Each structure stands twice: as C-alpha cells, then as structure tokens.
Image: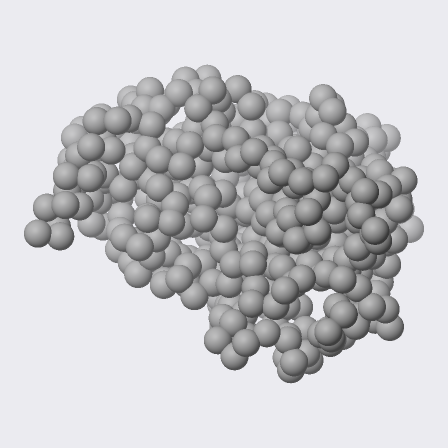
Length: 505
C-alpha cells in the first residue's frame, strides 16, 4: 500500500459483533477458494456462525495445493501452477495479513523477463513505479516497443488506456475483442507478446476471445493506473503451508466449521432461511467456480428469479490449461530467472523454477542436487496429446542445460474451470447481490464495479458478499481498497470526456 492515490472504501457501519444481537446468524459458505475464505473470515470476525463447505480435500481453490507422492515415493505438494501476488492486490493481502501481518511468507520476484520468438527480452526490473513514467521508461528501453512505435500509436484509440473507469470502460469496449482493439490502437506487431502474454493469456484466453475492456482494465490495474509497480511476490513455501493452513487455524479459532471433501448438491430456500446439507442457515455465500455454481443452480430449481438464473447459467469457462512440473536430477543454470514469460513461443507460456523461492522445492533440490521446474500452457485448444512433449522440447531449447537432465519425478494437471471474460459478458455477468434475500455470490467470475482482476477480484467479492450479509443484520462490515478508479492524469481524463461528448453529438 505505497500508492497514496489508492482508494479506500470504508467499512459499512453497524454493531461490532453478533453478540449484541438476540441470536447469532448462521451462514453457509459454499467454496473454499479465495472468495469463500475471504467471506468466511469477514463473517466470523463479526461473530457470525460459519460453515464452510469445500468439495476438494484442500483449501485455496485454484491457488490451493494438495499432498501427493512422486513415483519413487517422495512426498510432495502439488498445485495448479504458479500464481503472482501483485502489490496491487490490496484485498487479498488484507486476508493474508490475518495470519501474517508483515507478509513475511511472501517473497518478491525481482523481475520476470518476457522472451519473444526472436530471442529479445523485455524486463520490468528497475522501472519507475509512477505512471506515466513507468510506461515511458519501459518503451524507451524495450527492444520490442521502441520510441517510434509510441509515436505511431493512435491517440484517440489509446485514450481508454489512460482513462479507465469501471464500469464505464466496459460500456465502451466490452463488445470488442482484445486483438481488434490493439489493431485499432496501431499497437506495434513486435510488442504484441507483451499485451497478449502478460494480460490476455493471464485470463486463460486467446486475444480474439478476450474482451478489450478486460485487457484495458488490466493495463490500468497493473501498469497505468497504479504506482505500486509491476514487481510481484510469491509464497515462500507451498500454498497450503504458506497461506491456507495458517488461515484454517485462524478460522477454527473463530469457530468456523470447515467441511472439506464435502460438496453441496443443492440449496433449498425457505421462509426462515436455507436448507443446505441437512442444516438450516440464515444466509449463503455461493463462492464456487463457474462449473460448480452452474451445477448447483441447476440442482436448485427454486433458487432465484428466471432472469437471474439465466445470467448465472450463462457464465462461460475459458479453454483448458496445462501444468507440468518436473523434478530434474541437475540444477537449472544459476543465472536463469525464477520466472520467464514465453507466451510468444507456443505452446509454452511460462517457465517457473520453483526451488528459487519455494522452501519445499528448495529442500528437495538442495538434498538431491537437482531442480524443480514448472511449465505452463494456457488456452490450449489443439494438439493436446502432443503438448507434454512439445513443452519439454521448448524447455530444452530455452534452457539447454536441461536437455540431458533425467526426470526424477513428474506431475501434471489438466484443468478447465476458469471464467471466460468474453465479448459482452460484463453486462450479463451476475453481481454479488442476488434477488434472493440472504444469498450472495463471490468469486473471480462475479461482477464487481471496481478495477480488480483474478485473485484480487475473488478476494474483493468475498469481502463485498460478507458486507452485504452483515448489513442485513446490522453488523459492521469491512473496508476494501482498489487502485484509482480513473486515469491518473487529469488532462487525459478531460480529453477523453471531450471525445465522448463529441461522439454523442
């Protein structure tokens, strides 16, 4: 929270604790990912009784991890892949600070270079933090985005990049795909990997399937609207050890009942609340992923209005992604970055050297003299059968020292459960509030009119969902934050307003 222009949304007023009520409300939280854990924390801290149901045997959702073993019997923790914890993720960090006030269980990744197909590398190391100087310095020193390219950018089309305001930006650009918008912008071809790799493929979608409004909002969140910088943190250990095991203990001390490995099949509303898994509760937070949310709604025909149900059932998932983690018998060269973006070198999107920052992987590497490397492929739409071999070939091409390495252990994950942020989806996306009193939604696929995304959107909707329920019982809510919800430069905002007014006339 170094950006003095960050926006704080104060906690809704009310009683400090449910002990002041005649009866403590009881809430079921469905889903133990970031959104569900945030909502459970917010409710339990105000004295609400909470039952959290998670179909998996672990917490954290898409940022979770689970115990397994390698072929030789070595116990390890597997996950769905690398996650970047940016400094702009104020609401996620507020959750993590419940058990780690100084965030010592996060460590910075000083740089994450981006390699293009011609072998040119862009770096974020040492950039100024404050816009627009960060963008200008980046352009001046980039081998793929040159100063003359900056001069060719079409100013009128570029105004939305510097004047983002949610939800206005979605009214302007949500019906345009990201690839078309960059064409309109005259964005240089050599630098397309920056926009597509860092932003578009972070949403597990190809540029032709991603809303331009989402792309522009991401530029604002990470680059042009925030002075927190583009350095991000990663957990110092596996996700369970660093993040979710401590939070589970914290929730347990607050009286939260965690029901792991316990799916919710249906929800039945009644005049006194909701029937869920044999219990009656006063409120429900639906924080399942898109697939789980749709399945639950289909099994609960009495829940909600037809138009609202249509919105929820209309949520779409992005193409599948693949994570391949390799335990190698020799180290990766010491000068290799901990994280390398390779989105312009299909099918590989990035390489993570886990033993550089994760203690479990580092312990294994120290003991064996090897290394733990993770390969990611996003938005996989073809040739899935040959994908593992092609990823390995890319690794050998980029890190030749791995070509003769023996694979001591290997684990892989195919998943397809991330929300798709496609053209026109924003207007149809369900919001936190629902037409059913006592029922709220949370998750990274749920609409919230703030410049947030990915894990931060999940955490933000979790706080908002809890605040909605708390307000209904007269209990005080929790504050939230965001990067500025407008462009940072007044002159550009004025130009954008003038352009909009001219367009209307």
